[in-house]
Image (tube, rainbow, N blue to C red; front, side, top):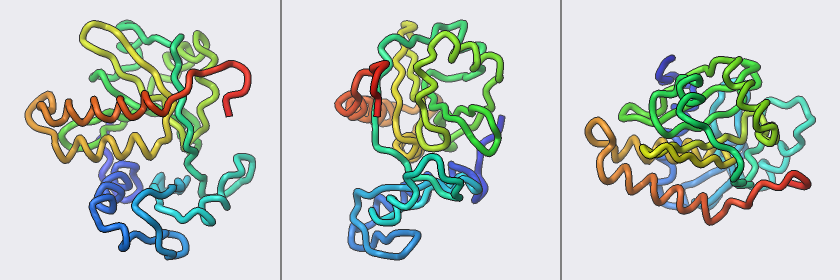
Length: 217
């Protein structure tokens, strides 16, 4: 388990993304062709470095083919809610995630699912025990709809033991971690960090559609 801090880590990408969000919209440029882009724009993932790249719409569309063997992959914009998926305390312990908030996605370069969770230093990465994660997917096969590298399972567990599971774009997770890093205070994050999490989950709740077995584009 390690806290990523190199240029090749997703944490480095989220820090760059957080900084760019604070700049005026007119300074934003596509990192692929240098065309001007607005503050709200799409992203692609560099599958080799794991970094996020801000992109204009034409560049984004070049990398939406999921079957193509490309270095980059466009981050989709769908949000789904898995009402039937619950991760109890035992499952959470087996996944070896020490806090109540994490996002999980399949890293195609590693060929396995990894987890990130927020903290005062940013994002901490943990390689999930392979058998534990496979057991979760076996119980909840709907989780197989997550697209590798670009979509994440966002899981939140409360102190009362309740849990929620959403499919979200991976860049949304990085933005959340970047925001929490900015406002984190003390051991548990403090009031501002909790408010940031509540605002983020309210946004996810507004955008997420319930998972349907047939046709979840």
